[in-house]
Image 1 (cartoon, helix red, strand yellow):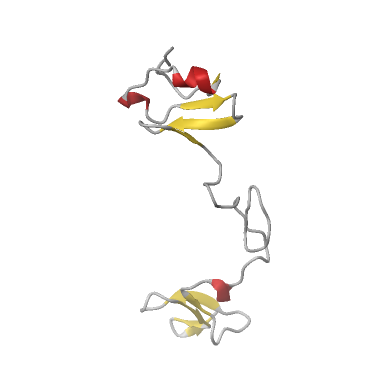
Image 2 (tube, helix red, strand yellow):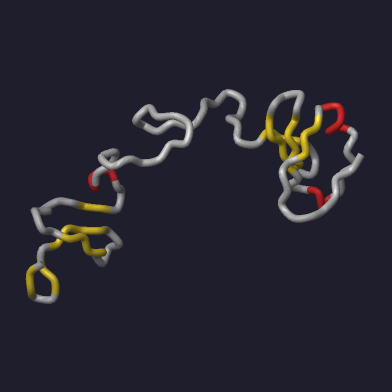
Length: 117
C-alpha cells in the first residue's frame, strides 16, 4: 500500500494495521492520515506516526488563565495594559497615548511635539 503525491487532500482514513503497511520515503514527511482505530489525526515525522492536535503525555488541554478551554481566544476585558511586560502606565491619565520610549518601553504621554493630544 502506498500514498500518492499531490496537493493538500483530505487525510486518508486507515486502520493502524493498514497504516503500518504503508511504504514511506523521505518525501512523505508531513503526510496526514486519519487513524480509524484510534480516531485520531496522525502525521508522519519521517520515523514515526504522531497524533496531531492532541496534548502530550502528562499535559492538559489548552486553557486560558480565565478557565476557558477548546478554541481559546482573548475576549474584551481579559487583559489590561498593566499585564503587558513592556508597557508602563505610570502617570497615565484620561486622554493619554502610548509612545515607544528610548529604552524600548511603551510609556503613557499626554504631549507630543510641544502640543497636547
